Length: 357
Image (cartoon, rainbow, N blue to C red; front, side, top):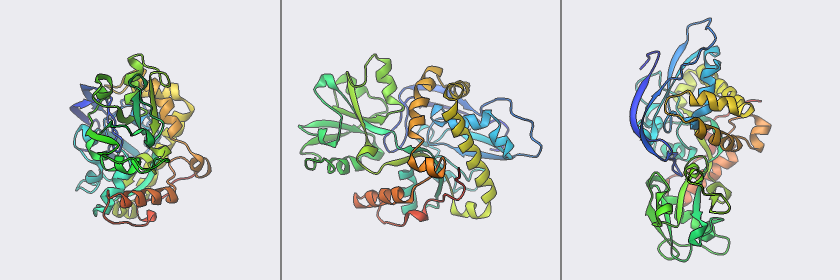
């Protein structure tokens, strides 16, 4: 696993993102490999590390691809290979970083909520940065069907709400947050297991589809539908504590043994994120040089994703910052709604030591 170029061939869903876990929305065969871009000649031997991702190595991870292409990792003494993972390959980053290979001790699962659940189940994990401050998950409805998607209050009048399996738990929790009174599953709405694409919206088998604002919406736009006119969407994070997507995680054990390596990866990654924020067009070109990534999709996605990568906290403390109060709200929400069976302090699962302006 420590070869110069790491190839992964897999038939996957390229445009699918789930609500609790990012997914892509169209199936095709792709080749995902380390981005081959000239970088400054290293002045020292590089440490090779493998980074399992929460999904395909696609434009979702543009900040990391930019850090590769611009030589930020090499300047930090690292030779980084990005590995497609999550539901795209079954290679779970949270499990992988607890394996036997010391070159796989940093990973990027799709959402902090997944890390919280893993930690509650006894898995060693600590989040050290986040590429997005908010989960892009939300609920979409087609207005031609007489539906609106403005809040959980819209889950009414027998609506059919589609959700991927690993996020089914929180639809009931979200329904309880309706400002005019709780919306109850099997009374006000019916919940069905959703697929990787918003097909159920288009064929009329569901009224609401849960997808990511940075992904499935692209399919609707490509079909000529206009947001605000033909469809509406609200983000889950507008009503429930759903923060931090594509989080950088490691184990407490590795953080204690190799703080400098963790620091090097985080700081180079945040440098890649800042470059993506400052130069979105160039970042799209860099991402599109990775096999399987469409330039048009990257150009569409990156500005939306950039908007979710910054917050008042990042302005104050630096990119990647994880607010303990927000993390605690997530833990409490998940515990109160039965997704985790024990509660704990936010400081047990986050470490902002390497975040800085």
